[in-house]
Image (cartoon, rainbow, N blue to C red; front, side, top):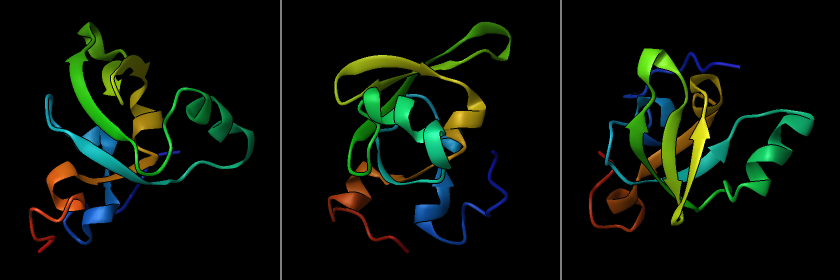
Length: 97
């Protein structure tokens, strides 16, 4: 379920698991197969939504994310399946290169 892409190769290939605390990003792609995508969609994680990591759990547990104003916890394996782009970049404020 993890990603083996180089985050520097394409901004869209950066995963949510790589985002530091308090950096807002926009989901651009969800790389999850079949029924595994449904729990994400039910929690509002869809392409175009804004996500911000706000708290890491002790001992490497799930990370808490703010998703369009709501707090949810995701395991690293799941966050690695969400391709993201900087919110400023997605808004056209920053250049992707």
